[in-house]
Length: 417
Picture (cartoon, rainbow, N blue to C red):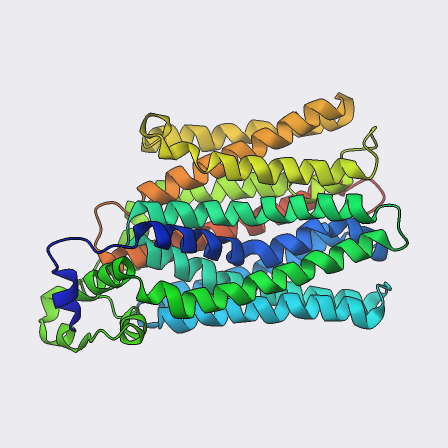
């Protein structure tokens, strides 16, 4: 069947709910490996106590994510999306599996050698993240909004899932010898399994869903060349697109797209710059000692992740979704007030207030992310939506990088830098 025939069907094909579920699982797979590294930071602080693992791993991860994303965003229109996403999920699987292998091979012992190995794998996560997150957001941008919302919810669910697993394993192994390590090994193995499932879901099942073939065919008719391999895997030809004339292939340049959506780019950049200036490093190292003891940082991380997940479903209710461009800017910049709030709460407040603030940080992060990323692609055709998705993910990763650098300012002057 030809792509123009497929997308010209009188009714939109079935499979929407199946696609939403798969998008959710793929969202989990897009961050579960990295969230595993962050969530077992309490274990890494016992193995590498002098190396600030939560901060260093984030700082190592980001340059590779941004560098890769810059290249992919520039050449987005020429890149095979299928190969890009499969390469990303495969790299995630290999990297998280090797994290497990490093720990088993060294018997959980510290030292500069294993630490460098962990840092190298963190850099691999950055490369994989740029491939998958940019590729998936760009691709889902020319499908229905429910798909991108499900994917973004999956990103948050990965953190919530890992946090819950971390709390369960910490409780289960707390009184046993080497309990932290046993728990970390268990859900590193679970994370590896999730990545393997994502590879097969994307490669085989997602491609063959009727509604996915419909939207990819529609994008191909509008001039997108990035979906050709996915359509070929589903048995749909795209050859006739090259015969349609130059006008059909025209699309706005990346420069024009960025200029038209500058406010959304600023929004997504500062959402993650503020979040990463606090999470996770500050929560692990700068919140003091409280009644929860070693559970304190684990609870804080879990509350952030759970609220981040819950908040990504709030915009489903139309009257709760913030769509005003000016309103989004005001909401995003008001989050800067969280920085002094965390500082004074850590210095003078009780643990209950810190848990509340951390929950609010996650709540605003997830809610604003979904509001921005689901509104931005409206009014553009397939190739432009794909390009815009990649540009906004680049801004997101840049914000994370800046936030990770700013996070180090909390420990300057404390004698532990």
